Amino acid sequence: MRTPVYIANWKMFHSLETADAWLNWWFTHPLIDPPGNCATIVCPPSPLLYPMFSELQRWRHDELRLGGQALHHSFKGAFTGDVSGVALWSVGAQAVLVGHSERRHQHKETDDQIAEMMRQAYLCGLMPMLCIGETQDERDSGDTVSVLVRQLSTALASIDATTFAHRQGDPDLPTLVIAYEPIWAIGTGRSATAPLAQEALAVIEHWLIEKYGEVEVGKMSLVYGGSVTADNVATFTALPECDGVLVGGASLDPGQFQGSSSRDDGAGDWGDGRASGEFDRDGREALAWISSSDESERP
Ligand code: PGA
Image (cartoon, rainbow, N blue to C red; front, side, top):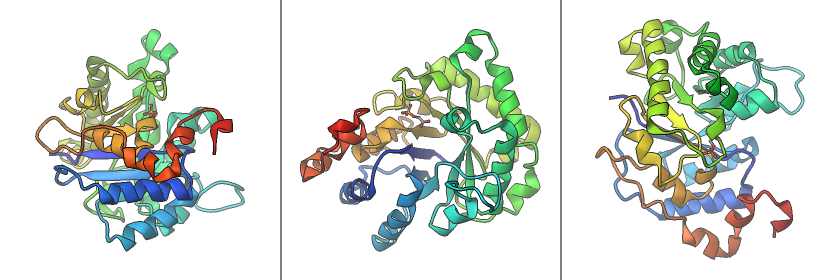
């Protein structure tokens, strides 16, 4: 069985204080029935990685891992404001999102740069979590499969079995995570239907098997992302090709993230998906404003 993977992408939300509150909530609310042998990876904004890493160590906590949200395609250099793979690794990240659609579109990351980022991730001992997916227009014009294949073949052009064999980092993590994230589903509240997600994940799995073979693909994980919540997560985790989810908005609240990480296949149940009341009652009121698009609501 491939490793179940649950990823929290905090995007540009949370601060030191609210990240601390998130972790405190997580530590003080033991999981009901944690799924065995799974990887749960939180991707906070980069400045929060090291303080969170220290907290995880302080609590001797190995159930959560940390990931970066992006890395530069060069090893080092004069790139003001960018973050290298080695810097992420040095502050406790074990994984990194690569090619998230918000990076592709807002930061104009190209397929070729994404291919270099994949190389950098392996070089620095980070498990890459490659995000691919089509726009609404591409889907409407029937181009979904060709978009997915183009994104896979460019990003993985120089990644082969030798890369996996020599990779650094935690050997318990999958060798590669591919996140199918239809762009029209990200942050819109309009998640893919089960048949659409299954169709795309099957295309991805088939392509990976053709390139790497069944044995190697058995060491990877495929996840779905795009408006995943506690209410719809089972739709995706029930799919045979789907090993987990990438959760954006719903991961800002630890209770909702636990709920969004449930599986309905007997592999475990992490929570009931209710927002963590304590998180707000602590007086932090964090969620109210971090989830809001209106910065004037900030206390
Ligand atoms: P969302 O984000 O869950 O808010 O749609 C998903 C993502 O970050 O890719």
